[in-house]
Image (cartoon, rainbow, N blue to C red; front, side):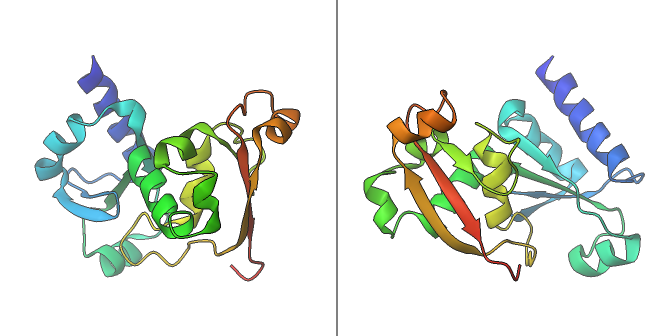
Length: 173
């Protein structure tokens, strides 16, 4: 059942992105892992709930120029990659580390950012601040990150028992 659901996700991603070729290039966690024929086993071994598909919007010429693929491209990121990359880039070597000592702690807190509806879906917001494709230039720049203590965070959202962070991005993204 897991494989059927996973393959449905891939097919749906292909349809939504306009991908009609049989063997698109697959990017996982910002690394090219081959074309679908080679990458299928790697993708099948990842828990579908931990895998987030992203759609690169561009015409066939742009895809070929940027990724070197005439068959299109499928982009996936694991939740672990999103958390680890955001943590390493923005928290690990900052004063926030005392409030958020590990990526596991980061996964449990709320995130206030540009997408207000993403309450308790930190991956959807954090992915805006990391690169998910090679040479991605569409990454938002962070102006500041503020930790909100659990007692204050629960006033905003009662589910934020471990606190929250508020991310302010720069205006000139």
